[in-house]
Length: 122
Image (spheres, rainbow, N blue to C red):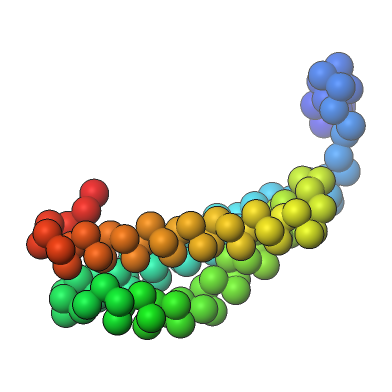
């Protein structure tokens, strides 16, 4: 522990108490689980849209209300990690909202591509 603290000081990083580091690790793990769960839910929704060959417009309308609990868990975990990393909560919320919207657009585009071409996007 002393060696790690000395190394941190030598590299210019302020040492973190073990409790703070443990909390940061727990937040990072929670974020990873929430991100994987949310992405998995979105992927399953798109696969459903592909299986039933749902019109892209219909799919997008329904897709907006899918995976909301997973999205909320992702949003909360991402906010904790971003704020702990020094980002303002306002800036973090905006970035998280942009990332979620972009991810949903990409997933919906995959379903639309499949509907148009019959080929599963990579």
